[in-house]
Amino acid sequence: MSDDKTPAPAGWYPDPNGGQRYWDGTRWLDFPGSGADDGKKRRIRKKPLLIMLAVLLLAVGGGALTWKLNHDAQVAAQVAAAEEAAQREAERLAAEKAAQQQRDNAERASRARSVSEIESSVEQMANKHIDNGMFDGPVIEVTCSPVNGGSTDNLTETTTVFECFVATEDNGDGTMSGYKYHATMNWTTGSFTYGFGAP
Image: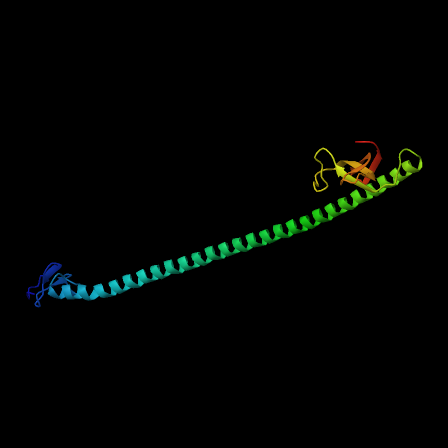
């Protein structure tokens, strides 16, 4: 700078190294200029920025990976919980079905015993009829069967009508002769009525 009493105005001035420096009117300030040194400084300063950017990208990527792993773990846990719940429900339904099957089998066995009771009661009535001379005996066997498509296996039926046959004579050809009786069973109350003649 010149030795004049009037200082040079503030501004950028050439640097002896080929760059530029800033004069604030009283002293040189250490601002980076646009010279060759400045290019080096910029390149040097870009490295920390790139490192920070890389660290930021790694942090974001790591966070995203952590979120995805947590999300996948949550989804897997939800799927496992749903499968376990479905398995428990299937086991519960299977147990209910087995218990219902047991109850149904017990009811069918009870109905079969009831048919035997009906046949025994009809046989007693037939023997009284023989004793009273209504027809000749003896009673060979008594069978009672549901009529009109009824069945003791159909547990939805609340009543069943039976036709009973009292065999009193063996025809010798595999057939029997005898008399018809009837009975009506009320499965709800467990009681039945019976009498002489077809239903």
